[in-house]
Image 1 (tube, rainbow, N blue to C red):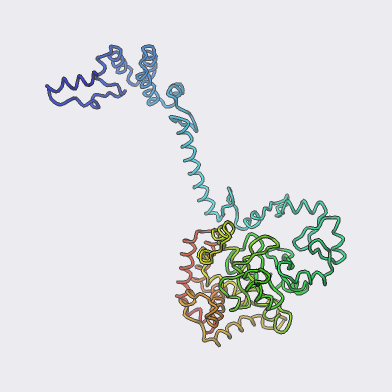
Image 2: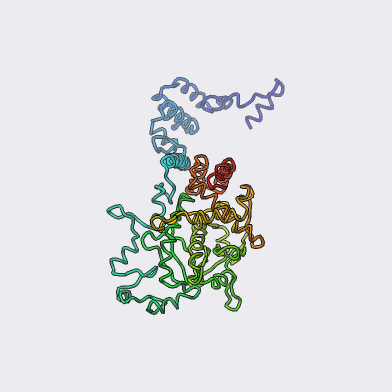
Length: 506
């Protein structure tokens, strides 16, 4: 009412006095001072106190006695302005001390903590990346340690990586036969040369018969490094003969990607071409659906099962598939087919489609376009790695005086017969198709040649771009970053096409 009255009275003497212009340093309206004699006295004492904290404390006590709460608080604010370390004044203001600082409330403290934590995390991330470390859960680790950590392994007292659960089983006397752990009471069957098949122990001959059926196949892990598992309906002897070939192919794939999957990859090798074709196409009578959506099993002797499932394990079976027929020329082609199939499994393990996979699990609906559209690795690179392992390898089993490069020479000769190397732009953009049979077969060989040049061509600019692409994959960069790295790699290959042709003698 007083403010309204003053404004009304001022109408005869000019414009109203702006209230904000009459506020002193302590926030007390000067217009109100004349209404309370204590306010006038406060103003007088405030000026006398000025920058003297002792006098300001006396003034604060006087204000408290006079019940001038606002003015008392202003005294406290002035005191902490002059002496921020005055704990008594800070606490009377309701402030909270943390990390050597005073905050207006607990909420402000929490906000400060979050800011500091984010700042520390950012700094830690910067330092870690400068050291070449990668993120694993809430810690930064060496890239070489990541595959072991992802398997749940830990280091023992000697620094060796071990799986705690497996170590426990070993101490209890369990023994492993392929992927199955055999309890102590049954392990004598292994020394008798028997194999555990379901709930029975069978001779190797009977076990071969048991494992010759779909989804009852042998599951043979790589014996030492355990980097892959061979699923096969072939006989045990044939399966064991494949393992060295697959291990060598795995090493070649690491060269292509500059990294390896954290978990063992699976590869499926069937015992005949007929079985291979049946697994790809499915069988209505057996209520077994097809395992691929593009029909590429008809183009090559190996393909990627993007729509496969294993009912015996109740899991999806999205892996590379091939066959190794021991009859006729089967073993010859099986050598290449199994390598290519492993390459497809290897690529999928490093470049999965988690969103499409999750949708398939939840809705039981498979969307091939979404599955392949989610990939970070270009199709030509994926097939190039598989074809490199399949065709552009040096055979470590060549006898002294033999030609270890026979597979490379065979692949290049095949390319010449089909008209030579296509323009690189066409290779980068090509989509294999069963209706374009001849060109699809040639394209697989061409992508292998590109990978051969990138890995073994010793062209420094191309090598640098390949390593940058590999680093993007290794650090699990997003699709945009990987796409940028792959484009830079394609551009560099195009710039050095003449060096590529010279390297391949084309």
